[in-house]
Image (cartoon, rainbow, N blue to C red; front, side, top):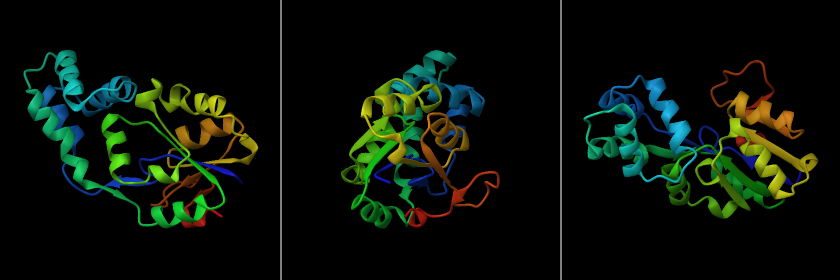
Length: 199
């Protein structure tokens, strides 16, 4: 194996326990949580919007009387709770010695800022984010990445935590994939429970 492509959320990083910001923002603008999540995917995951711009988009789309400042407060609330899993740095350092590493993630501009603040960009040849690419994984982000990167897919492994996005899609593209199942909940797939299991 020469190339390893990592997902970010749930694979390398997680939110430590705390208030559910999606639920709080949904209450502020009068949406069900699923509706808020849909707006995040449709707009913020595919566009380079600041927190204020996304807050204003939410207000416009919902005809809400909520203030931009209140929404931004809840957007920023979880930022201090982002953590790397304990196996991430040692595994990236080890795997980086013999492989080219890549990061492909569905995330917003806040996610991009988090990735930068965690100091992990240096391990990756390329960081591909949906907010910069204009499409999500379900719309072809992996396909676009592999077409543009010129990587030999036979020498490539995708590591992620979403069966639909990080396993099924790469497999359909002819790329090897494996799921990381840190909580041991995925029984229908071949999984690993730690990045240390990647040889």
